[in-house]
Length: 300
Length: 311
Image 1: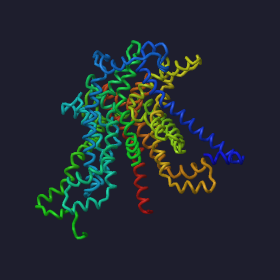
Image 2 (image 1 turned 45 degrees about the vertical axis):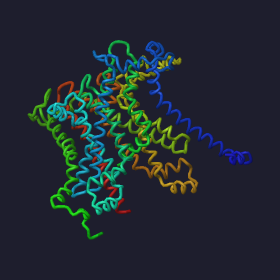
Image 3 (image 1 turned 30 degrees about the horizontal axis):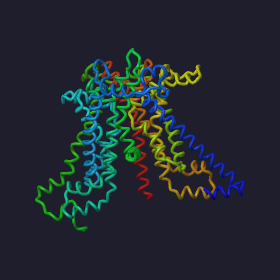
Image 4 (image 1 turned 30 degrees about the vertical axis):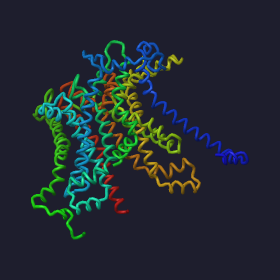
């Protein structure tokens, strides 16, 4: 820096270059800041409104710095707010989502890891074709499966239950998790597996002793991807559950559908944040893996 | 080493039936997932195809009526709105989020300070659901409480911003929100691409005296061209499957002005009891995806083969 400053004093051309450089940098940061404001504004608005009094919101509009502060809206949104007759807030739906997302994520990730292991290290005749057929599941629009699922869930007695949603998300998720894990395991050298087999290790031993210890990076990516996707899913939730059984996404739409009365923006903001918080936390703490999943899932 | 058949465990000679079981294990492990995927992909698709050719209304029935459902689907004004919206949305959404995504990626690539912070800010919308995004933006678009009220409060009392209140403009509210949600995604992919460009290539261009913008246009962007295609294909997929965003943002309204194919399917199957025609609409969604993805996959395979031959 000092050198630049020195030469700038003596050389008009260098001074001009320095000035150009300065303005270019300024422009870069200005544009980035502008977009950052656009991206953050909606989040800030919701956070503020969840902390403002309803009367403050009614008087000064949604977009305004808070002139009041209280946490009541959060408590109401969590436990006591009334949606179509029941006054239990989002609590129950939050746990519905949790009990749907955790098992579905773990089961689909485990199956994906084992499938990926078979499809990369224990290939057999036709296994590549089978892999490609499984991949088709990634692209299936949910709408195609709605009526068949409705029928199957009915037969299995799983309509309007979290277990039904777990089943759907596991079946739908297998293709993703298999794809992720298989593509990761392909990069593990085959010689490692061969050596283990010569030493007499079998299918499961190699999985436990060699594959799993190398897997944390891909397992974290897969878990994050699955958790976020399943938590945020809406279509199956709204079609196959109702009322108290709904996951939080479906409940949020019901909550904010708005009646004839003045809209309780404070409570609704808190409810929206409750619904957004788990994936946001995962994103903030596992951002690196989140992005990795994104780019891997996208490019392969 | 080379004389051993590697599929046979060497150190511990096993009994024949155990050996046979051993070779079966991988297939047995794969079988349940395969069966589930097979049912999910093929049986479900054929099932819905069958329903789309049947006279199902409130309940599935299995009397075939040929292509009647497709005929009445394409004659329906609302379906017409749905796919017109889809085309409009796809165009703006893809171009818009790719343009913003590329801009942000290039800016971040200028060795800015706090790169991780910028990235985190631009990408966080992707972590939250379309339901959350749609709900919040529906408030912001609300003329009485949202952006319009805010700007009027600042003194521009004539300011008008009521996209979602008008049938002709509501689709643009969906487009803007869609772009807001996913330009960070495009940015992440573009940034990954920019980082994968061979630095020597860039240096060579600079030594030749190329300006920054010329280096990008002539050297860097052409080498990441496949990423443009990948981003576009993924976003077309998003667009075709658009459901949650509209459900939370406009609920298909005002009137039916922001109906999308996925909304139409849901409505016919579960609100109006026209399962046959709903299934036909679902098949059209699948067809649209196939039109995009089949050529793309073939191109990817072809490119891999070509690379394999050359390298």
